[in-house]
Image 1 (cartoon, rainbow, N blue to C red):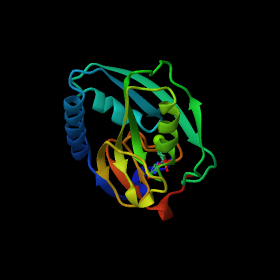
Image 2: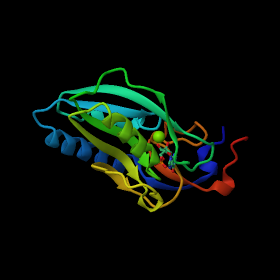
Image 3: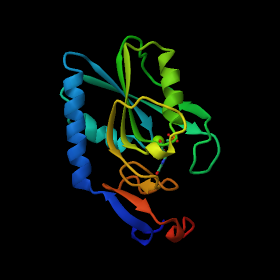
Length: 184
Ligand code: IMP
Ligand code: MG
C-alpha cells in the first residue's frame, strides 16, 4: 500500500472541521427528531466512520442497522445499476429511518436504496450524507442533511477508500491520480 502522502493533492476538510460539523449535524438531527425514536441505517462500507462519530452526539433514542450495496462495473463511476449485497436485519415498517452515507455522487446509490426501503413502508425516510458532489448528479435525490458540498474531485479518507484502503484517515483529502500507483 502506497503512503498517502505520495499522492495527496490537498487536505480538503481537516479533522477538526469535520468533527465540528458532525456535532452540528447531530444537534440538528436531534432537534428534528425530538420525541421520536430514530432508526439509523448505515450504508456499508464508506458510511461507517461518519456514522460512529455522528451517533455519539445524538440525544434522541436510536437504533442501528446496516446494509450494503454495490454498483455493477469496476470503475470509479457508478453505472446506474445498484445491487443490494447485504439486507437489513430489522423490519423498518412504521419507523423513522435516517440513511447515513459517506457521499452522494451520481445519486444512483441513494436513489436505489430509497426506492428499496420505501417498499417496506417506513413512517419517515430521510438521507444524511457527509459529502455531496452536486456537479456529478445524474438522478435527483432528496438530501435532508449534508456535511459539506465538495467540488468534482475524487476524495479519500474518513470512510472513503481508494481500492479499499485509507478509510481510517481522520480527514478528507483529494488525490493526484498521476501520483497514485495502487500496485506499489
Ligand atoms: P453514487 O451512486 O454515484 O452517488 O456513488 C456513491 C458511491 O460511490 C459512494 O457511496 C462511494 O462509495 C463512491 N464514491 C463516489 N465518489 C467518491 C470519491 O470521491 N471517493 C471515494 N468514493 C467515492
Ligand atoms: Mg459508499
